[in-house]
Length: 358
Image 1 (cartoon, rainbow, N blue to C red):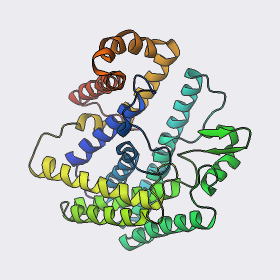
Image 2 (cartoon, rainbow, N blue to C red; image 1 turned 90 degrees about the vertical axis):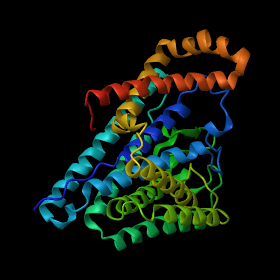
Image 3 (cartoon, rainbow, N blue to C red; image 1 turned 180 degrees about the vertical axis):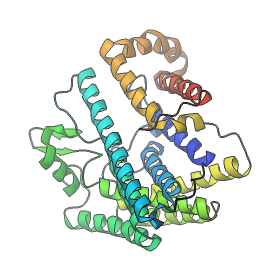
Image 4 (tube, rainbow, N blue to C red; image 1 turned 30 degrees about the vertical axis):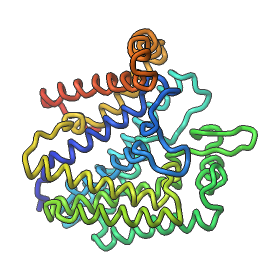
């Protein structure tokens, strides 16, 4: 017995490509002192367009997991094989993330190695989502989502709330890793990591919500994505009255709110690219998303270490554009050029049929 071959939806690849392009756009401005407000993360509570990018990617991880592993749970041998492969891939993603952090430590002269990170979280969320897809029925998956979100809410509510550095999530990260977290105050011993341990739990729920959306895409041709997205936005907005949106803590209100936007974007892309046959602009970047993310990180590290990053911006784009358009526009233009380089590279890889699977 073998599972049916997973369908390839152009909408999923294209939306993933735009998510990665957005990651690069906000991660590599010419000057961090001059960045437009929508391209910055919220300092703490709140939600900017930039705050929606990472949960969109995790949502799409869930969608892809549902599409790729549908039917494998029916055969015990296939299920065990798929689970082993999934966690092997999750481990490779985490190891790649660790390697990139080691590279950043060298490039930026950081005194401590940071274990947590984006690819590490993606790996954990993918492994958890694959396990849920293979071993839980839909009702069990919804129950897991509810337990993760409501349990995390209860944890925050009973341990001091969401105050910066004084919440249980930040305290656990600082206790475990000390100065190796993203933000650390040596005088007080307090710290925080936006991709830390406890906040990965609601991030897994974001991935599982994407998995349920993936089943709507496969089994119902996307019918239900629009109302599901609108319902998630309403629930996330109402929940924010009790528990604010917060990407750093990945609060449950933020997880549901961001899943709502992701569902609406997926519904729109499915309608345009899969149903109407529009050209799926961005698909090339989505096919090799991890290559673009990891490659751009490595490239930025080398450019930073050699001094070419600052030289290219301050010696070319800033004096050319800043007097005319302003420093923010010049900084954004540099980020667009950086994204454009990887966009063209991904297009060239797709033209040659090159697809790198981590």
